[in-house]
Length: 182
Image 1 (cartoon, rainbow, N blue to C red):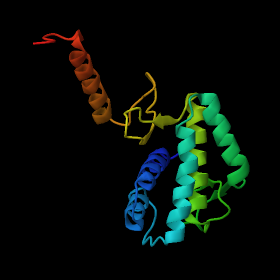
Image 2: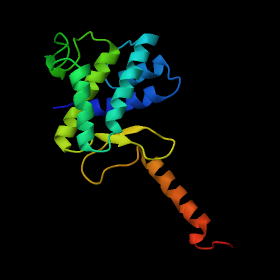
Image 3: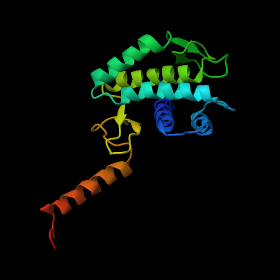
């Protein structure tokens, strides 16, 4: 069973790494918050590798359909990950799957492989895109679909509300609302 935190970790890292000038300390804090053991001292090169991996993973979230999300994941799995293997990190954790080259793989390789695995399981389990990119103009954050119900369009209630309020105001200002021209 996929840990519940794997998709959330993917989202949090993709969003953090998309921020201009994000520091290694911020990214390390996200990794620690999702259960990675510390201390984590990321170099500039490691941060760049993580950012490159995040851009590749973001493309899966941006897919317009489940078929395209699966195709994008299949390309990443075929060209950017290793074979599926089980590890317990020398007995320090329960057995779990990995797609990276080994337990000491570079951060970028690990992040891309673990994200591909998490998103693959989401597509397999739900038969729909694993998430999306927020439809609120200027936001651009990625999110995971929580499960049943309609497909989400926004990363948060804040973004959804912001869009609804803006649409309401545009409707009122174009003369279609109550009190127009008053």
